[in-house]
Structure formats: C-alpha cells, structure tokens
Figure 1 (cartoon, helix red, strand yellow):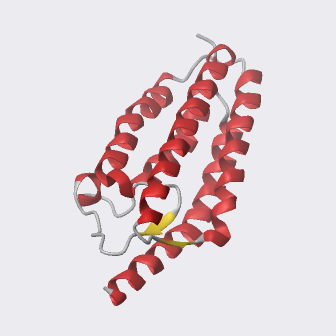
Figure 2: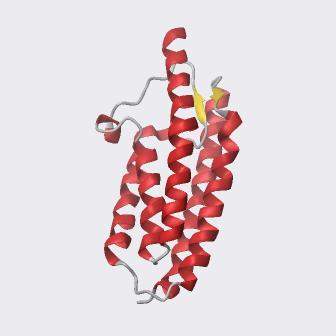
Figure 3: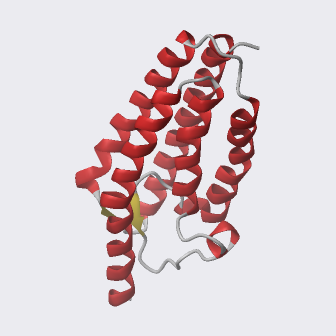
Length: 172
C-alpha cells in the first residue's frame, strides 16, 4: 500500500479521535470545575490547539505527496500507542483533561502507567507525533512537530504542571 492512499484515512481517524477526546475533556472539565478545580497553564494552552491541527494538516499534505510505500514498523508503533493512550485516560478517569486542572481534595494518580513514567500521556503523544507521519513518509512533519512539541512540553507544559502539583501539595 502506498502512503498517499493511507494518509487521508489515517488523518480522518486522528481527527475523529481528537474530537472525541476534546468532548471527553470538556465533560471532565465541567465535572472538575463543579468541584472547585483551579486551572494552571492557561497562558500556553492555546499553543497546543495550534500545534495539533497544524500537525494534522502537515501530515495530510506531506503524506499525500509521498510516493513511498507505507512504513509498516512506524504504523505498527502508532497502533501500539493507542491502547497506551487509553490506558492513561482510563487510569486518570474524570481527572483526565487537556487542561491542567487541580481538583481540591483530589489525590495524585500513581497507578497504571504512572507507576513507570511521570507523564505517560506526553510520552505517548510525542511518539505519535513522530510515528504517524513516518508511517506515511512525512519525515519533515515528523521532525518539525516532534521538535516543536518537545519544546512546548519541556519548556512550558511540564513545568506548569509540576508547579501546579507542588502548589497543591503545599496547600493540602
């Protein structure tokens, strides 16, 4: 199978997945705010809503231009990441969100994949941002967005999340 043929299906699946996840995140946000959640990291949140659609568009355009065959190991990696993504979401339950929301009286989740990695969702997303484009020969998209995501995660998101958790521990 050629990458240009798979790309629209891959992107459509990703768009559907992300839309369903945003819907879940909004429901979880309502639940958290009803319990007095405090949001952190609002100043950088918008960057992820630019990064991910731009990644999808770049993946679509570069993947459609690719004359290469599908790179099966990268596609397999992408597919293996999906259960891991949902393991993280299931472990967090109603606390899973795309925003940094700290619910008063909540406990830090340390089970599931959090036993092995401090920020497993970010690991999964970082690998997805590389694996999906590489599966369809979009290596420029993989490189550019992996680097952009790493800069945002390491420079903004993870430090904001760690500050929020530290403040919560001090106050609780």
